[in-house]
Structures are given as structure tokens and as C-alpha cells.
Image 1 (cartoon, one colour):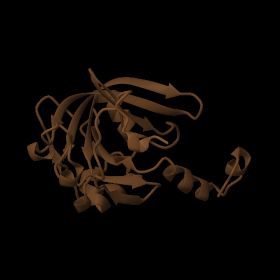
Image 2 (cartoon, one colour):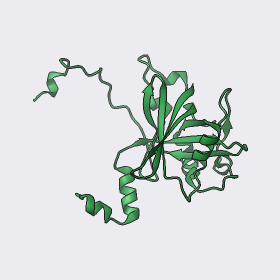
Image 3 (cartoon, helix red, strand yellow):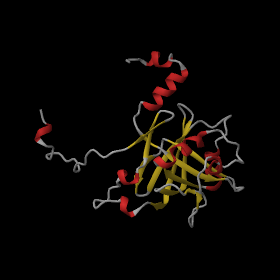
Image 4 (cartoon, one colour):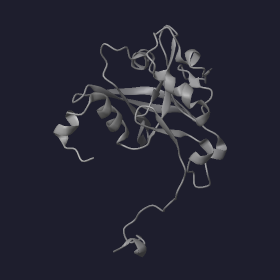
Amino acid sequence: MNLNKVQIAAMDRIRRIKILNGISGIKPVNLIGTVSASGNTNLAVFSSVVHLGSDPALLGFIMRPVGDVPRHTYENILETGSYTINHVHPEFIENAHYTSAKFEGNKSEFEQCGLHEEYHEGITAPFVSESKVKLGMNFIEDSFIKHNGTRLIIGEISRLILPDEAVDSNDELDYEILRTVGTSGLNGYYEVKKIGRYPYARIGQIPDTLKP
């Protein structure tokens, strides 16, 4: 496959969506938990969570265009300023996947998809009890991306929950212990396996074996 911009635009819509959703590679898959001002909980699967900085501890995720289709996650975050980000593990991939269905606002994906709410002091939004890595988030910024109408939602981590044994002696997260899954495209899920670790890259310390 070797396509230019015109050929990409001319592709069958569904084929284009499937290929372009996967072309960036394996992405983290997370469940974002929210609650409305009236108390209705919501849970939705996202594959766009990204690290934005460590001090302050910021994460972002992409919200698809807001319009005719209700975006309960977005609405709830604006209403309450609180949300959670939860890793997905093999034991409940299927449950997580089906949170993407377009449920009515008064139907909680927690209940509809067989997952359980968990609450921690200072965080209004629900965490996913089944998740091993849970992040409580405070809403910081809503940045509109005018080229395609999506939005970058930025939040600060206010609560970090994960198993002690998943942090190794170098303070690296061990994803083989956590078994956090990744996703590609619209419905493919993958386990991760560590294949190496290398020192911080510095000029003058590049191994001779890499040089031509």
C-alpha cells in the first residue's frame, strides 16, 4: 500500500477509518469515569490519553467533535471538573469495549457493561474497581482543535493508585506485572511485553555497535 493524500481521501469511508485509526501504532486504552451534576455516572473507553508533563502532572485526551451526538464524558467533566482515568486489563477487555455503545445519559455504562464503581476521598468521579491503575483527575483546560473540530481535554492528576509491586527498583512501571492492554484501530486489543531497557541517551555514549 502506497497512497497519496488524494487517494487516502478517496478511500471507502469505513476502510479509511479502520486503517487510519490503527496507523499510529499500539495506543494505551483507558476507561474514563465521570458523573453528572445530577448524579448519573458514565464510563467510556478512550485510546488517546497522552502524557503532557510531570510538574505539574498533566495528562490529555482527545474528545471527538461535540455536536449532534451526545458526549456525556465531555458534558460531565465541564459540569463537575472531575474525572478518572483507569487502565484496562485482559480480565475485562470485553466489558471495556462495550462502553463505547451510545447509551442514554441516564444509563450507566458501569451497570450496563458489568463493571463496578469505586470512590476515593476528594474525587467526585467514579473509579473502575477492576482496574489496577487508577488516576483521579482535575479538569484544567479545554483546547479546541479547529482543523477537525476535536478537543484536547487537559487535566491534572490529583490521585494516583497502583500496586506497589508494579514499580521496580528503578521506579519504572512494570507493565508485564500490570498486564495493561493496548489497542489499535477500532476494536483490536493487545498485551504488552518488555523487550529491553536502555540508559538515558547522551552524546558521546552511543555504543560503537550502532555506528556505521
